[in-house]
Length: 203
Image (cartoon, rainbow, N blue to C red; front, top):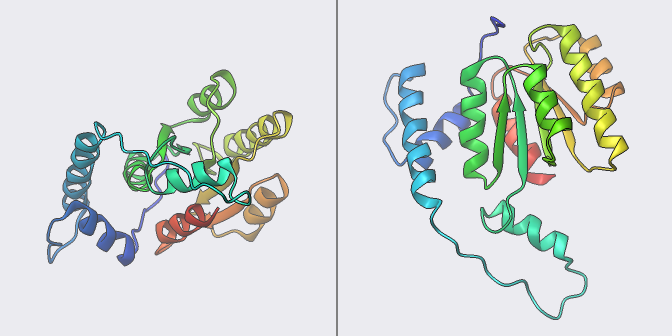
């Protein structure tokens, strides 16, 4: 398992406690954040029984059915868009799963390239985004997963976007990932979750 240090931006921490509806403690720790995330998870489970899907607008030919489904998903309604998060650090997959579920996404997670490859190529799951750590658990395996993922996307003419996340600050890693088909390369430094959420929100 990677020994990368995961840092959470202030905006993300504020968002977690805002969604949870609990007061942010003076001292923030992994345990206090986990408690808040558990509160959010319970809220999501309680909301799963709701089935409120509005009708699409009429008389606007420029507004396609695909646009409508995308807007519904962004609002957490109707057919949900899907995200796959691949990281061998459990706290990372847990945090991202909760955040993306709150945004209205259906989220799958995998801790290694084998679990990810099964979800991507063996099942019939079609993802809007695949968020993958480069070191799962080695650089070699990460690039292998990136290559195979891009191959599946091209062969099936999918619109899936690949985001590579990593603690590495090496410029060569960014160049290699973008050249191999990643749509975004994001270093795990302060505020990286905020940048990831922004990217997913506008794509």
